[in-house]
Amino acid sequence: MKNILICILLFLNFNLLVGQELDPIYQQLDTNYQVNISHLIECFKNNDKEKIAELIVYPLSREYPVSAIKNEKEFISRFDEIFDDTLIRMINSSNPALDWSEVGWRGIMLLNGEIWVDTDGKIIGINYQTNKENKLKKELIIADKNAIHSSINTYERPVYILETPKFRIRIDDLGEFNYRYASWPISKPMSEKPDLIIFKGEFIWDGTGGNHKIVFNNAGYVYECSIIVIGLDDSPPAMLTVTKKGKNILTHNAKIIK
Image 1: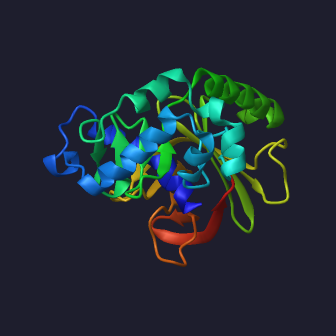
Image 2: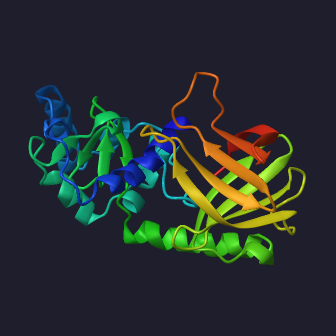
């Protein structure tokens, strides 16, 4: 799950660099890495989907609500959903020394971050979205809106569904990063009316490793949904913390369902 989050956050973190000149150390791509990138490019030029499938770190996340790609067989079956002619040409025409850059812990990116790979030349993230995948995402969002309670079926982008031992939590972006929190007892489905809805959540980065939280205020209570990308070996993927006037009321480890 942490691998999924790292992939999802690569593009979000890279946005912080847009409009700024990257430090020269990040622009230098080691010659050993160039060999790995060249092998990846060659696989695309040969249209060798089986070999490309071997050069993917699974699960390969896609923008929610599109499901992650779990294995090589699924990757091959969904290849045309992920790669179109434009992206393939972008890869095939790229120069490992000039068009691929190392960007710290994030990995190695193609051009403006359309593709991210690790130092072994394996793809860890694809931020490019084909027309086919974008159409699928819109269809899934429509289905999702029809499946959840009418009080929360208006949003621009679904963000997270979390589950603690007692609660199911849904976070949506209502537009312009205005986040909404909705929660139910774990036994209730999202088709029922939420017990609690909070608006105007704030997205806060926690360091540069990808950890972040979305914070909501409600009648003196502060609800923090923390997403842990880099933590200790026994760290949960997420946490729900509720405080009032600085005093801890509740802390639950959480699973990231979507």
